[in-house]
Length: 314
Image (cartoon, rainbow, N blue to C red):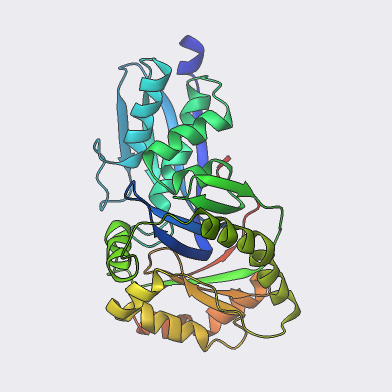
């Protein structure tokens, strides 16, 4: 414990966007069967972990809009790790928040995975990635993705992961109205009420959709490198959100009109929308030209690149 007390760990906790989000149907366990491609981007939160001698989990943040109590996914992750490892170590955790909340960028899920990874090292638990992924899956459907991060196929409710080797060099512009947030749970509920009138039982259909995404999903994105036409990214949740959310409709319209935009979509359950460009310099130039317009229309905007890795120690 004396050695541990000297340790301080800093972690970069990145957001994600969805390059494909398909809701296959509602499962009997109440979750939805999904087929997704998720990709980390370099819009990131930062977490600092330090041992405390009180055996307590203490969370602080520079963000006033977050609960710092037991309902926070960071605190839940820390308590789960303590329980599963049968230890009584404590930790002081500080979160520097950059990823907007309720944005479809999974900042909370990223923070939860970062907590599992960070405290596994801080407390010298030596849990392997399979164990961390298993713990992550009990906390939330997006969280296992962040244990490895990068770009992955995500199946089941999000916990069945297949790592992909692609290293895209696209630039990304993100748009989000800071006054608008969307509940992921409510969005799935609304989608289910509209499109999933019975439980999913056809395993052959599920396997076919998975195979199609394996075979064709990245091919579509690779084709963008040749600037040979526009690609529509599939996001089934957009069918619900864009009908109810003017900020999503307007963001998609703004992005579609950018001169060098290769493709655009809503991320996750929204309301953040994004556009892809052939490289980061093109994206930066587009943002420079349009930043005043975006601000006048009420949007925060960011330029990002794709990340080959997810959560990293710094």
